[in-house]
Structure formats: C-alpha cells, structure tokens
Image (cartoon, rainbow, N blue to C red; front, side, top):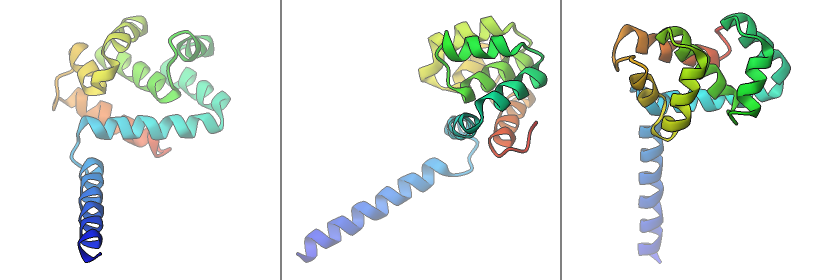
Amino acid sequence: MKTRSLICALVLVLGISGLASALSIGGSDDDLSIWVEQLSIQAKADLGLFKAELSVEFGVPVAKVDQLIIEAEMEPGDVYMTLELARIAQKPVDEVVDVYKVTKKKGWGAMAKELGIKPGSAEFKALKENAKEKSKGKKK
C-alpha cells in the first residue's frame, strides 16, 4: 500500500512539474498557443464585439473576419494572430491564411518563420507581446 501511495505521489509531482514547465515564462511557441487559446475563449464571450475590434484594429471588414471564422474554420484567437502576422510580416491576409492552413499544426512560431519573421527578431518579439497583451485584454 505504501508503494502505491509513493508511486501516486511521484506521478503527481512529475505531472505538476511538467505542467509548470509547459506554462513557464520562457517565450516558447507554447506561450503563443496558450495566449491564442485564452483569446479565443474571451472572444467567444462577445464575438460581435471581438469582430468589431479586429475590424477597427486591423482595418479589415467584419465580413472578412466572419469569412476567416466560417470558411477557413479558424478560432477567434487564430483570426487575431493571422491578422497580426499579416500586419507584422507586411503580407496579404490571404497569404497568411494559406500558410496557416499548411503549417498550423507546427505552431505560430513556425508560421511566423515561414512568413519571414525570424525567431528572436524584433518582429517576433512584437508578435508575442501583442498576443500576450491581447489575451489579457490590454491591447485594443
């Protein structure tokens, strides 16, 4: 019985350590994924407002935001990141959507790199900082 309790405790400690490691402030691609997921959750609380904010912030029609959500089957946070990447990389939104469709499983860092934004560059740092701020409701 003691052995089983010890094993359970060990598994619990390792699990918590792994979670803490995954959530640590390390600037990883995981951070971007977490922020994008948080943003999607927040956006769904008032999707109309979120779409209007994106329209104003990025100068795109709400219909374009709707198209990305419906036709490209993007979560709201993914739409934000797509628009942010397009702005920072100075690429057309549709080009970023094409990269998203092919590269999305590799993460936002890989997509940024594919669009010419080098890891560690000022542009990449801006992308991460903007996503972090937006997910916390600070960036409008």
